[in-house]
Amino acid sequence: MLDFVQTAEEAARRAGQILRAWSSKFTVREKSRSNLVTEADEASQAAIFEFIHGRYPSHGFCGEEGLSINETDSPYRWVIDPLDGTTNYVHAFPYYCVSIGLECRGEMIVGAVFDPVHDEMFLAVRGQGASLNRRPLKCSGINELSQSLVIASLPVATSAHEKAVSRFLTVLPVAQSVQRTGSAALNLANVAAGRVEGFWSTSLKPWDMAAGILLVEEAGGRISKIDGSHFRLEEPDLLATNGSDIHEQLLTLLV
Image 1 (tube, rainbow, N blue to C red):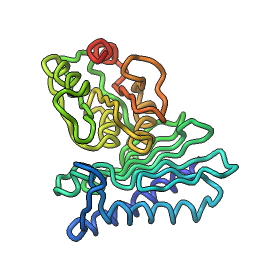
Image 2 (tube, one colour; image 1 turned 180 degrees about the vertical axis):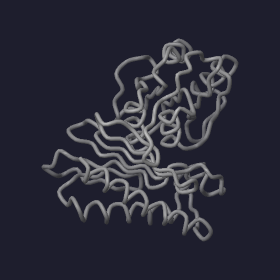
Image 3 (tube, helix red, strand yellow; image 1 turned 90 degrees about the horizontal axis):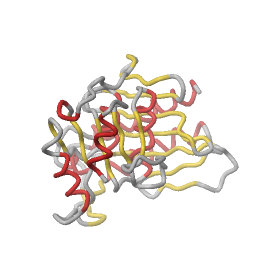
Image 4 (cartoon, rainbow, N blue to C red; image 1 turned 180 degrees about the horizontal axis):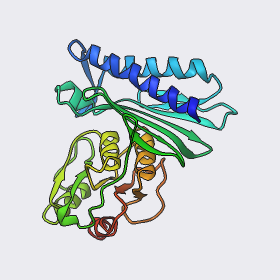
């Protein structure tokens, strides 16, 4: 397990260096409306894959930029987002990261989320806790939504009539503050760090969540679907909180 987490950390740092290097010179094309992909995404993912695949050539891979290797006998699969928060990155808004998770037989066992702007490395190992730059992480102890900072993730190119927007507006007058930030992996890392009390979404992909959900769980938080049922990585339905009464309060509001 130590080798796995060291590999995830090193791969994330290498990718972070690439993102910083590309930040002033990348070009942009649109995958779809309001959904941008950059050369930096692709260079970052290539570096991650080359490094991890070189160490574990039999492992499976799943990545945002078309990376999919599933025909393997190995129980391990790396789930990679080489640049979570692409739109923020494009606009030089400093809230983006690299996210790398390792799954074994359907269970996340290692997570690494690296924020290259602030040089913050979030790491988690199943059963061994979570850390930020080697310091242990623990979710906040706040248990009232009225005292909480929470974050909502809205779908790409959302409209005013989306259910996700009505959920946002429902929570807005109840929480102390509701934000939309543009990086699900960093949102989850910040729940684990005790900076944010809750985060929810119904529009994410596995690579957006893989590392972050383990960070939250290992920092003492709680993960479920927004109706309170069991979370599944392959389904775009997530509520992550600090594990206090706030979880139940949000469940009531988000139905």
